[in-house]
Image 1 (cartoon, rainbow, N blue to C red):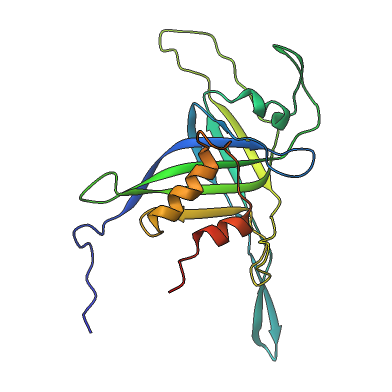
Image 2 (tube, helix red, strand yellow; image 1 turned 90 degrees about the vertical axis):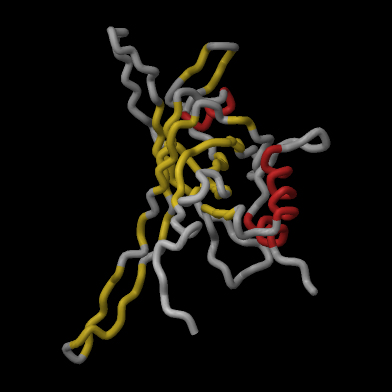
Length: 222
């Protein structure tokens, strides 16, 4: 057995950046429609909640600790958004360029990437993040006068999620987020998943449900 060591060359990993944002509007039938590229994505801040301890006491001691259900939320920030996001943001485009606000908000799915780097290379891989059952809350928009230091306006949306069952795997709780690490998974299986997410000449981009992701990413049997 070897003794523990710290900060070995190539193992000082970190994550950075946000790119390859894709919006998957939910259809009336409850499935995810054709994905569209989300340009101008600047940040995604994940903010899970819940999983809080509820302590139980008996015999004058702490008897047990129960955890509340965990929920997934996030904040999306961007310089712009695709037109397909308008219904998700409570808008109804009644004709080209004319949007009525304060309408029902549509659900959507979302995916994005974060980069993985280390002390040897800034680009050793990436993580794919898949988000399901999302709804966006109304957000503040601040329009400011143009001055001697102009800046592009940033939009921001807080999102909540409804977890989705992992079909065929009752041992797993419903999930609202999945993370795939490109440095650890099979490259061929990752390419097949990205073909689904981003589309190609033979198929439209779509968001596979958690049960399908589970099946796609399983290692081949010997």
